[in-house]
Image (cartoon, rainbow, N blue to C red; front, side, top):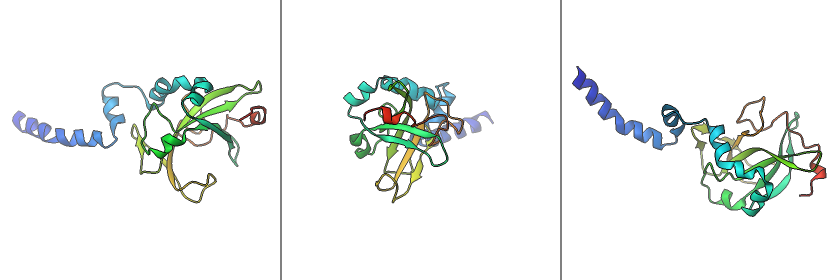
Length: 174
């Protein structure tokens, strides 16, 4: 009986490896005791707390994005080269999001991963599809927000955050 289970386990191993290679690394890492995706994002992207780092790495600002039902995403600093390369890497988000404060300072609140190839996922978290035409004038794309620095009552991967505001965006010269 033990021999049968061992044969089944060895036979299943290539399937498990293939499953993990197809983007199911979140489950594999969880088995190893790894951090959650938001924790991994905070660790990989904390350098962007200084907006100057984002600028040095080729990110440029677009206007503050707010939702029709309230809340906002903040000011996106977008790296067009990273969007064009169509790869998704945890340490190279395509957009870095900041909330403008009353003092004019920008506070890092989230990052956004964007690709035109999909369906896409990062750490097993599926991206949302934004169809075309869209308000950005872009072709259809897949995106994933990760609210790693500011709690979002709608969820860590939601688009809009009801606790973020564009109220002071006019105070910030983009």
